[in-house]
Length: 428
Image (tube, rainbow, N blue to C red; front, side, top):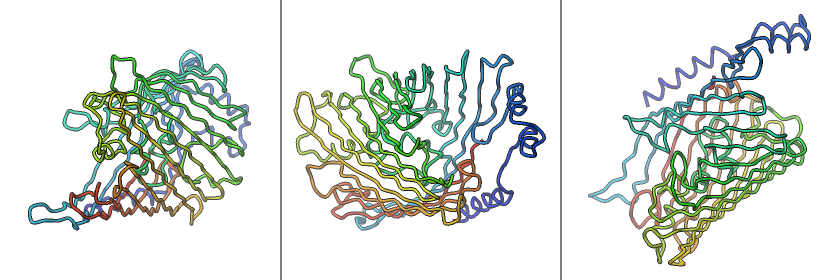
């Protein structure tokens, strides 16, 4: 805990320095009325280098045909896990742990080339490099080109987040809690390479995404033709709702969003992949071990996953919820695995735009055909937004309840583990 105190002290010193406000000379002159709006725009166009907090440094060519922004995100985290000892034996005991980690260290490049309609993004996560090897899919997260025909019709090629699940689509630096819910991690596909058509209709009242992908996840490729398909539709009746949790902007008018998505994929049982839903702690990883009639080795499995979500924001209050249903069908054995899960979370700024309290409930049933396999989490969080999402300190506490069939320690009893996390985030 001494190390936690040191980390907290560093964060407090940074906070006492006051909100970071990197204003250029032209910003100050515009605010004081020395220059007009037209003068300001002309100066912006003529300046080859600009800086905006959260977006980073932007370099633009003299003819305005090329532009590149370079920025980054640091997430420094401490986790204390107190594992339930209810299943302890003389030979095996639950092992608590205390861990400091560089959870995410990201560097991103984005901009346009030849025309503002041809945009690109590349993002690297250096936290995925350890001891000369990579984990969690590797260093490269985003690498895509996007061509805008018009707002309603755009084409994207490359590696991106599969547009499935609102919380997953929301950036890791715009979360209401220290990290996403266990439900999101258990059901979404993750990153993949492919092509997508997407757009915003009526100024964002309706947004859609339709994509085809390789089907095996981040930085992973196959030679077969069993690719994946994803589709998402979001309706925003009161205006476009951006993918960012918490109402740190303190929305004057209420905002509402309803979304639905579908994902289909075929993978081979035992095949190497980097799909989130196929990991050992996912619905499939947990549920498949509990099947009475298991899938055959190397058998093609058809995965179909559907989800629905809703969001509400107004005057510092925000609420988000998602439900997922998933199914895996063996093409030869004809065996089937079904799962579902949901989370609901809400938060309110007790000090407007600065301090938020939040609560989240998460539920996963990895195999609907067996009993005693539920995973339930209750999480409370407090967040201090020093400069919106750009500089914030978050802490959360979670009770992790797992029934006996999937308990964190093997035994006949369910487990209730206690998790405490503390995180400092900075964007530049």
